[in-house]
Length: 384
Image 1: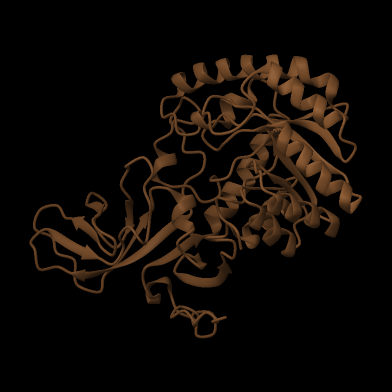
Image 2 (image 1 turned 135 degrees about the vertical axis):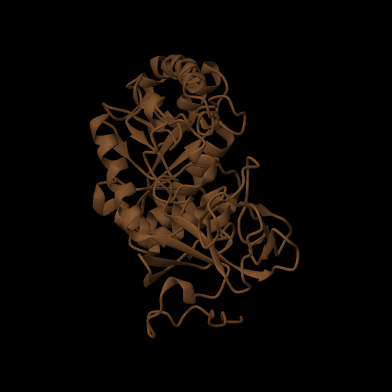
């Protein structure tokens, strides 16, 4: 097995430099804004009387997860079993696997993680997987806490009818190694619904659907107050207003991106969580008038909803940054301005989750100083 070669940016802490001395492209996080965002979301959830269980798939970084828990989060959500294994190794044991699964290998890994001491809950949406997971848990003489995943409209996973849900609840109830502790009701279609009133209307429809499932499923729960988990950075304000959820899964709020900046979170266009995430790029060619080419393209940042990066430093703020090709970005400059080759330009990336997945580390910056390097150790992790 080949070990990773040292990154050209591994030197900044040993030999202090400012953020302008980093090799590009590089992923930066503004520490002051990150702390402020973590604190604010925790306060908002406390005011709404819901627990916060941030989604670790957004940042994939134990250093950020530990700060979220220190601020009051009850645990971390994960999208893959590998993420669960990673965060558990990093000392974070209270985990919720929010994705469904089906293979024997997946059941084996989940059960082994619980057997090692992880407080891991997982979601189920069919009786075949429930019976399979139960058999693996019985073989290890352990109990697994599970939630029923409800399809809230995206048709990605989840039970689609109350009949299907109650039948799954019956199977879980008759499987001695499984404990039904609640439901997952992730209404993902709300997260990037730009318009507040439209999102509010859709959340009301989701709340009615969720209440119908809860009315039928509560009798099957083993806890007096069942877990009702879901929510997103874009939807949490309207979702908590219905007072059905017990915990929120918001993931992007510490870091943010241009696509979340486009979401009117509260109907007042308040920027509740200013972005702390930046991609640093460098100008590598400027031969065409009013254009500058950078080294930040598709392999440096990802757009999901076709919104562009937003320039924050190094170029005129009214210039336009376009992801032009795999390796290159293009800055369209106003008037006759020119950016010198080597100029460092920082941008807010379009979509934080998959952008972060492209990098091995965050460079933590406090104003102009690089103060730390945080590993993104669960990036790219699916079956590892």
